Length: 137
Image (tube, rainbow, N blue to C red; front, side, top):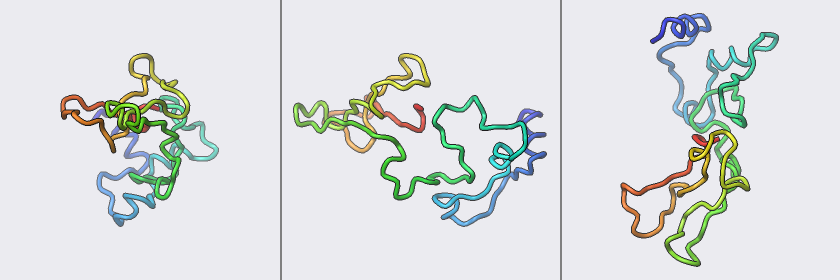
């Protein structure tokens, strides 16, 4: 671990191992010293500018924090149903009203592929194309 990062993590009180209930790690969240540092009122820190725009400033850490029972967390998808041709089954047409994101440049900003739940017939494991809003903001 780079020396500067090690010093920072020790300074904010981050621990290598955290013990908490599974429900906290998955859905409910638990407090984290790094998140507390970023959101500390009155400090000169703010939500880090190197993170993608639109990323929620979380006050807790959990894999699915603020996602449980949320219908619109990942945004709005327009996906082909395969009605015209089965080659389009599950293929994403646009996400949040656009077929490209604002964060990356072409070709990394293109909204394409499947959301991962449904694929056209005949797709092999070496042809899979996925779009994940968590990675493409």
